[in-house]
Amino acid sequence: MFTGHHYTQPFTFNAGAATGVTPAFRGTEPQAAVTAADRTYQAFEQERLAFAALLSGLSSSEQTTAKLSGTYSDLVLGPGQDGKFPTTRSGLQVGTLSSDKQALVLAAIRLYVNDLDATTSTSVLTKYTNELANTYVAYSGTTAMSSQNDYIRIDGPNVWIEFSYQGGVIIKNTPHSHSVWRDHTTDYGGN
Image 1 (tube, one colour):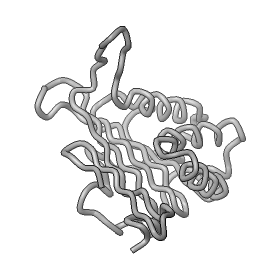
Image 2 (cartoon, helix red, strand yellow):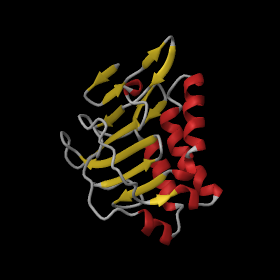
Image 3 (cartoon, rainbow, N blue to C red):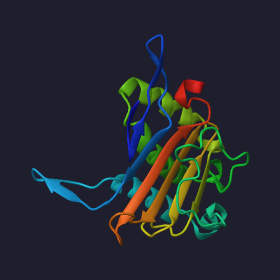
């Protein structure tokens, strides 16, 4: 397990094969772009843009179905919330969406899964793709994913991804995001 205040990535192996790569926690503050050696980096910007594209790509009625009634100021299944998946999925069922909108959901999932080695990511992504029709998208706040208390989750038979856009804790009036990727059956290798 690699871990720190705003990063945790576990790897569980059995007989040399990866059996679990979650729960993976990510966070950053501040979230501003940084340029070094003529390259610009901005933590969470790919994810934020992918989630915003997913939500803004939905019709107004699809957005209404996906909208959660409460306000979410942080992750539901963050640290210390192991195994506490909601018993009922909320939001919009991905299987009801057109193929181009389903591709937006998969693009967001891919940003988490593709951080793994090629063999593991292919296996995990195949599982999540096969379950995409029974996966749900839900959000709270705005569809831009750029305001305090903007929140989105992807909840499938196995995949669980949350992204929470918060206000600054240390540096006031700056973005501060938290995210978690969990798996309903293989967190900590399935134990």
